[in-house]
Amino acid sequence: MGLLTIIEKFENFVGVNFWTMIFAWINLLILYIILKKILFKPIKNMIDSRQREIDDMYKSAGDSERCAKELQAEYEEKMSRAKDESEEIVRSAVRRAQLKEEEILREANDKAARALERAEEQIELEKKRAVNEMKDQVSAIALDIASAVIGRDVSERDHEELINEFIENMGNDK
Amino acid sequence: MNLEVKGPKVYLELPFELPDSSIFTMKNLITQTTVSLLAVTVLLIVVALIATRSLSKRPGGLQVITEKLVNMLYGLVEGTMGKHNMKFAPYIGTIFLSSICGTLIGMTQLFRSTTADLSVTAAWALVTTGMVWYNNIKNFGFGTWLKGFTEPIVVMTPMNIVSEIANPISMAFRHFGNVAGGSVLTALIYGALTAASSALFSWLPGIIGEIPFLTAGIPAALSIYFDLFSGFVQALVFSLLTMIYVGGACPPPEELPKKKKKGVK
Image (tube, rainbow over all chains, first blue to last red; front, side, top):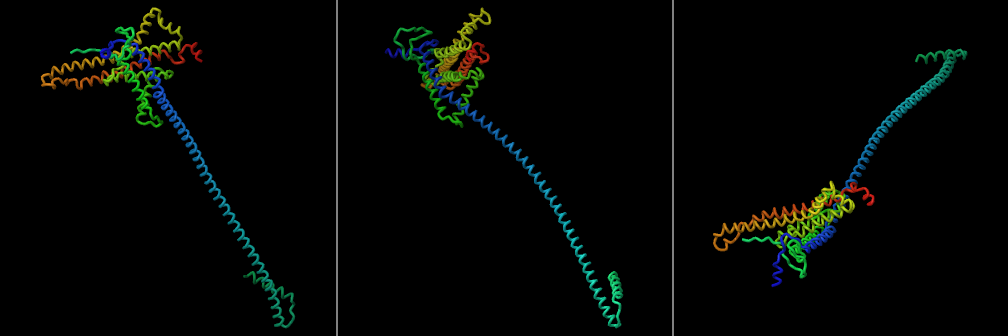
């Protein structure tokens, strides 16, 4: 019966119970310590560390981008330089080839001219020699013929002069 | 019909001679509120354990929600108290969760709302006041804190003291009154609807006439306002007031008195 009366007892609606306050404080303290340890701190740390990681990623991505852009600019510069260089090379090669061509042509012309000159000289020489030979022979033959025909001595020297004159005139007419 | 508004049920009484008046008692060791407080504590710890069971840099659904809520809490504390007072965030979060869960646990009908007991809200309000006084004395010095009561003019001293004492009382009664008032109102409406129901449908034969049809639905809708909404608002108000009072006692480091600043360095 005593138990029943205890169970049926209610506190005042507006009142302060010392022990409830103590319990409220203890519960608040326990909750504060435990929630701070298992909920607020870990979650906050997680958020912060993720934020840091994202910031780092963005930073490194920015760095990479800048680096890539620098590289690209460098490459482009190199490429344009290479283009200029190749053009220069081609131009100089063409120039050199033209010079070479001209030189070769000149040399060839020179050679041809020289060869021609030599050939002409040769021809002239040959001609002279042939003429001289012919002169000798003709004069000798003429002398022989004349001696044989006439049978008398002809002044060798006079006839030679005569014949020479004749042959020279003949050569010039040709 | 008779409607009684009662305080928490007493489970265990101390068998000694202790003060036991209508507004302050030391005789009732364990009451319904004690059980509710314990239930809230266990519930929150279990929920926290589940919510933080597998934390990872790439969060799952539950972790996203938890992180969002914790982020909101830190944002609120930063906005109200400033960046230098972030160390109070876990306490604010604890008091907010205790308050809202303490209020909502009454809706289960298994437990009585912890915040519908003045002892609990008074205890929490006293913690706030304790923090304010401690931080005031720590940051400004005892003399400056006492001198603060005579400002702006000496005549204001009694009023300043009264307002300082009124702060925890008003906080405690505001929270308690809203939650307890809500439950009283719900009980009243329940009674009124039962009476109206019996007046309207008593002509129905037999047991059908005794079924209080009107009590289905309407109290639930009202409960959404008086328990859910009001519980949330009161938890927020209590936390905000705590933040404002404690934040006022903890100004940014550059606004502290120079002597104290040197001492800190």
